[in-house]
Image (tube, rainbow, N blue to C red):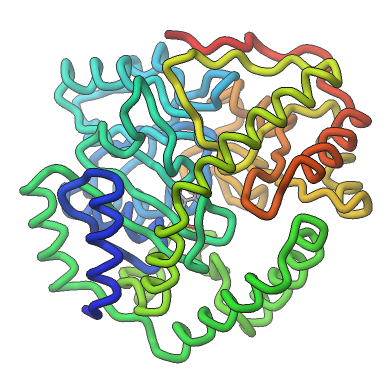
Length: 393
Ligand SMILES: Cc1ncc(COP(=O)(O)O)c(C=O)c1O
């Protein structure tokens, strides 16, 4: 393993306050490493929120386990603790607590059930770098956590992922697994990704994102660039060479991003306040999040009356509008039945999929970006009736 990768792992573990970290090619690979090291396999059940990305579900399926989906609560989009226990069976092996958009999960409730029923919690921190719950960082509650550094995430190494853990045994098992089974990224692919990071740094701004994303997806389909997800990742069968470590170039980019992480987090916190204020001024009802949650939002979610129209018109208004999550297992093309999801399983999540769009909070967005975005969303309007705005304690 390269020195840069080792340095990034150590720096990330130290930033979080974890004992160990392991860097991978993508966040989904990090989840796979944790599940495999925990011995998840055929016949086991893994609980996830029914409002996630299919790439998050794939590692469970690759290992032959069954996915069990819990509906979300409507203010933070995180799994509804009141519905969690009824999903637990003698086969439940793991609960995945995804901190959606950066809103922390209701950790006290989840950990109480986890302790009482003896089921470990893995935290999905891919969208929640820097968020805290009762003063403690997301990523420090569960037996292990995983992180993503893909383009849309709190900071980017192009693509990339990390496992963090406090559990010495689990750490040893992940280390052995990496040693025995992990492959290294091919040089050509790693170099191409470096080039893409350069293009990203110099050309992507809120006004250009929609056009750049369309071009990037087209180039990905043509196989001309390193895409975030290959076509073969939209089905629940593991592609060859999936279990891949991080490249040196990704790690160097990660180290550079980590040096700026405090400014990144402060900026995202500030952008949340700006959006809260502007949306309130526009007559919007802003979710009332408990004071003990301090979210650092990767994107600012907002419910719109006509999501399809918003998505269609955003680029024309130079608004960087995100669509996650388009369906309970984003994106909309996911063959959901192959993943064990049936329509109606998670009605609150399904409603969120119909209504929620998201706005940029990253460092290239500022008050004027927020104003343009809110003016645009305000002109679409809020849905007629949204669910209760206060999450359950
Ligand atoms: C909540 C969540 N977890 C995990 C992942 C997977 O991360 P990566 O793309 O780095 O594999 C994603 C999607 O990209 C996600 O949205």
